[in-house]
Image (cartoon, rainbow, N blue to C red; front, side, top):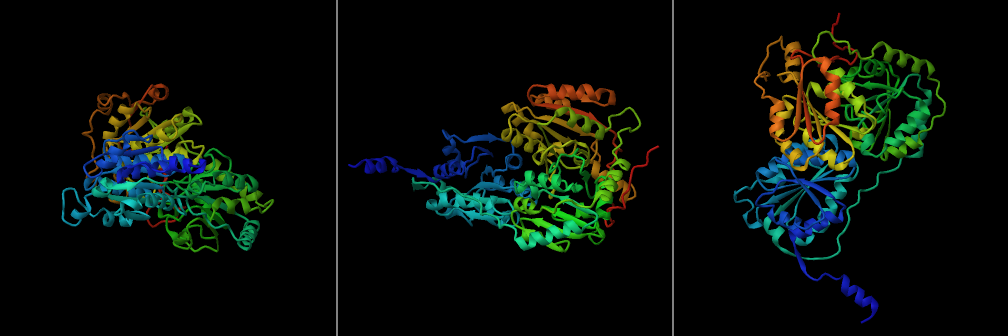
Length: 567
């Protein structure tokens, strides 16, 4: 036997593998390191194949916790997150997480067990039409009906999830396919399709638009981070000196304390940011989609501005606001190509700087109780450069977006488009596996924490050092605020005054915990929280009537903000 023949014989497969084993090997071939899941009957062959695999599996206590953890992992690493669940309720418990990933363009591959092929359509135990149920909330779905096709379809799923505008892909695996023999062989690697480069003529027109503008403004969205274009975006801002506003997902595209940054725009945006948008004559929209929470009444949004729209997804261009010019494709390359030279915008820069001075956040709230915005500001400053905030949904979400310091996009993880309560703690679990050395803090509320509170057990099992700030106003605060303002104060099903003792509950789960309710306790509590070993919860009692300001009412223009009246 020749040396070449001997090498080929050594490389040849010596045995067959089950479909479940082939799936696990295909995941390894995609470079997967961590998966989040929960086992059950139909997916058991895959879990059997995980024994001895180099993959790290994190057992959450609910499938929704698993997919939210995969979501947080994906947002921090920029890689595709992976979650696994069984058939029936396991699969249906993933639906909210799939919808969340689709809304926020997060690459996830979700693998669900399914009943054996002969039983499909027979209403078998734990059978649902997972393919049909999830079709509206994924980029693509596959039923792995042929065991020999598993490696190629896994590779294709990863390519689709990460290509273009990222998003979730579902792989539904019948149990008999997972148990069927498959010939072991070389495994393909799924690679995302490259984005088109900007056309030179379009770049020239865009450059001219920027040069000609007197009041240009950059509207930064989550697409900047998704495109891996943060460095290119920051270089573009340094070259041009353009003022910047950001969406909820765009926070951190430049540091939130950068001199060019005017703040969050939209419904609960900084007043300076909203007024600057309304005054601008050119809106350079980078990876943003003119979401209703950002624009207010669309017809009144940036009424004097021409629109230059840079995005990877052509479907977003002109969907809500017509663009005067679009650069569709590789966002980083487009930003790198835009070099307008010195701009005559000194007076505009001075005007936006004055807006910032006139509308700086105030932290001098009256009373002795804890003022949540001040606490969050102090916490983010004390946490330092490695801070990652994972946030739930409600008033605390808006306070965190307004007042926390973010140095990079992956430092702020929240459910933006879907607004899913219960996201924060599982996302923190994912973030800690993505960046073990980071200081990860979950900001949550007394309503949101109860949505996935079982994941405190996951924190304890793996001794994950997640720090949780629970702002407790004994109400569904954002709903209560809207009922007060827009429904004549008729409060309906928002009372949470029968909350448990959250600190005691956290201790039962194995976390360190502490409760505060006076502002003179804040500094010491922040030091305690950040210095605690392992997972810890700071339970913060706040005013049940505290509101998030400013607020753009529904149907109003962004400059028509309701504001707090303070003596």
